[in-house]
Length: 207
Image 1 (tube, rainbow, N blue to C red):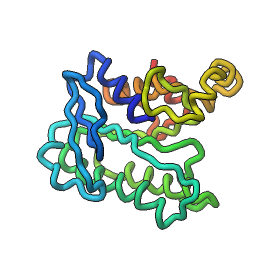
Image 2: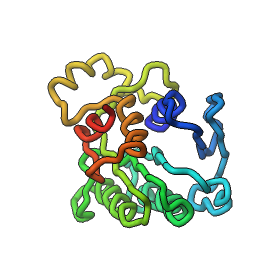
Image 3: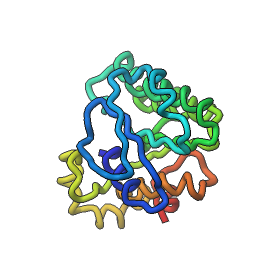
Image 4: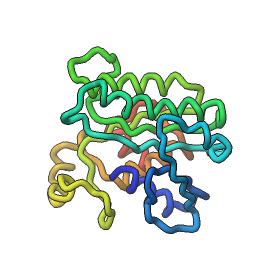
């Protein structure tokens, strides 16, 4: 859901010249700015090295719910895939800004009780250690979807009418997918003083 929304914002933004999407399956989006690579092994991106050169941003929006998963299954999908791409990009494009979609309550200490939060925290910390121009960890909470997107989760569709109320009552926990996309783009154009972005930071950077 997040990836589709961020792609939508990038394709609409006048300052984004081109977008490369790496997918396992076609995204079925047609746009003059868009190029797509279908790649099956997300644990090894080395065959794409030449095609990944020259970009100044990576918006890593892939993720999976930890519900019903133990750490042995969750960690490879969450940590190994992310670092496989990031470790390739860092020396290839040293001026690149890497944005990672993490989640609210991620555990930066890597020592908490929640497995998913520890794994996300480890992922964030290791990304921040790589020699990118900048890396930003996005920690959204409840996300208002963009109307018309095909991959919106049922929960967000059901809750969307309540978004104005939730935004008013819980401003530190609620943002829109539109704001996440704009914040990612602005992180490349403007930068931001903090590397870990909570909901209020995402909203501020989107402006």
